[in-house]
Amino acid sequence: MNPKIKLFATTIRVNGTKYLSRTIMKINRKKKTVIFDGIDEKEYTYYTMEDLKELYDVFDQALQVWGVAALEEGDKGTCVRGAGIKVYMLPKGCRYVRECMVVSQPVQGNLTLTKTVGPALQLLKNEGIECWYTEGYMD
Image 1: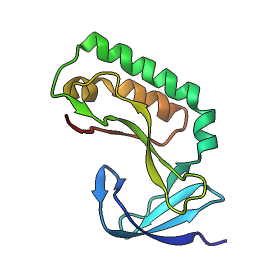
Image 2: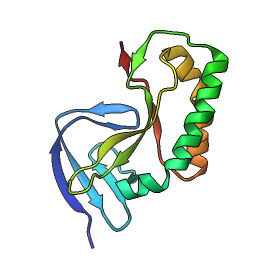
Image 3: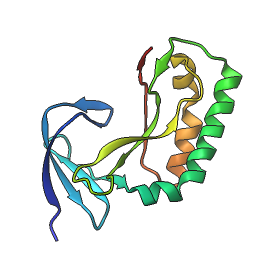
């Protein structure tokens, strides 16, 4: 079965770069992967709400690891909102994947967040979760 090709107009982040406007998205529902055609040919894993519920304990553990490291470092840097660790998610009843925040920032300082996120990201990647850190925006 060939993946379905979907057209969408929204902001999506691929390899840390935001893409606006229309992009072709190939979704393979059997493998739970998505390819952003014309951007790169890498397959990215997406998750459903059921998948994310099963991984709740892992996300909570990552937040604890990140929070302890951030509190030891101290809250330094510019206050930001929307920083955290994200995954691609396909909401129930939707045609297109979205970015979903699975671990929210434990403190507000951007310098502390960027410096201390590494162990939490590594914990999630060791569990096989395809995720990335986003810096959010200045408050």
